[in-house]
Amino acid sequence: MNPYLILSIVLALIVAALVIYIVLDKIKRKKELDELIEFLTRVQDRDSFPELGREAEGRMLILRSEIYKLASTLQEEYAGEVKKNAYMADMLSNISHQIKTPLTAINLMTDALKNGNLDEAQRRRCIANIEAQTDHITWLVRTLLTLAEIDAGVLVIKKEDISVSELVDGIVSGIAIEADIKDVSIDIDVSPEDRITCDKRWTSEALSNIIKNSLQHTGEGGSIKISSEETNVSVNIRIEDTGCGISKKDLPHIFDRFYHGERSDPGSNGIGLSLSKQIINSQNGTVSCESEAGKGTIFEIKIYKSATL
Image 1: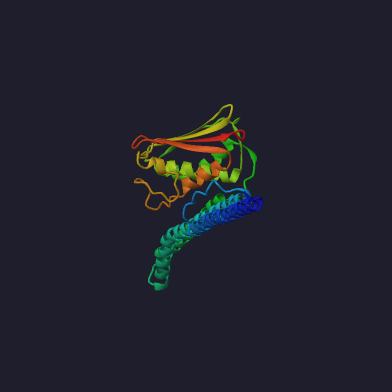
Image 2: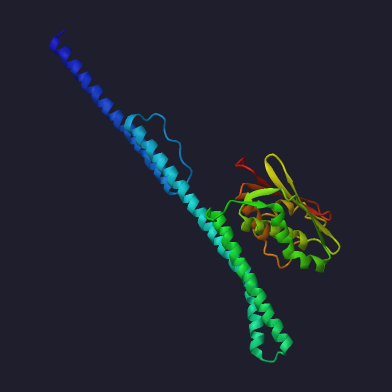
């Protein structure tokens, strides 16, 4: 066979192979680009991420991997912002709902005072009511702001070495009159040697909310016992009452913010126990509750000695 013909055939085959390779390569590249476009479109629509083909190589594989990582990060940040916005909307809604009742009472009392037909005793009752509702609003706003600070991780927590006995005595002295009026006895069995590392102000707030909750739900002639126990890993504070107890349905939700159980006081705002739990958790502690309807309630607070949680 003519050598020139053979050479021509070989060259033709090489050119054909190159053309086929280029065409196939373009088809492959086009498919990869189509996959990228589809992926970015679904990310833009906040859909689930599609599977990226595994046949990519070289720079295209690197590009696809980097786009995937970037899109994943952006989607996580977007979800976080959506969650924050939803939280803020719920918080503002709850604040407005909680403040509406005392504001309505203040408006009614103010209108009554403007009337001018009240005797001195009625006038004093109106003024006392306005002061009480104003104090309630102040407490609500302060508590809700504290919860927001805890959620945002910006609440300033001091570490102090505190005597549990001193902490409990201070709280009980503040509710002693109310307990006497209800004829509820408060027994304190706390060792002077038991000490915890915590923020005195906020821990006092947390314990006070729990003890006040026990007092609120303990009827005339009942009792509350506050005790402490030190172990190798924690100091445990136990608050036990002989009150009405908590139903099985409500028990899992008593620390939920704004939750109102079937035995909740009509004037309750449902944030005291939630605040207590968050304050204790933020200080390397835990709080749990055992209760049964009609058989009293036991709260147990554990403050750990070291960062074991």
